Image 1 (cartoon, helix red, strand yellow):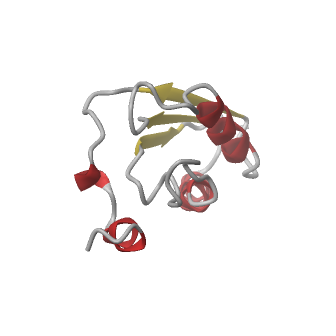
Image 2 (image 1 turned 90 degrees about the horizontal axis):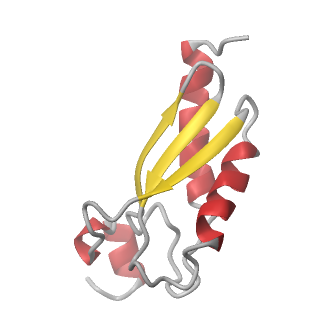
Length: 108
């Protein structure tokens, strides 16, 4: 059964909450505030594709972090499958962090 626009919107709102529950182990800030999430697309079948990056290509959680994102996203009611695509275009830098993240890290 296809999701309605309202259901898709509700999933979209819940995605941010899930992203804020996932932390980069090297930096005490969640992946959303760090600016690691570039995009999230939800289709009518409930599949979610998340495009994200890592703080560096050599990030020690390069294998585990995408799996954690998929697992958290799949906890949302209505989501049938989550896929994470890692990209390094554009390359992450500190300017992608929210003001909240910069404050938390003492950069403001």
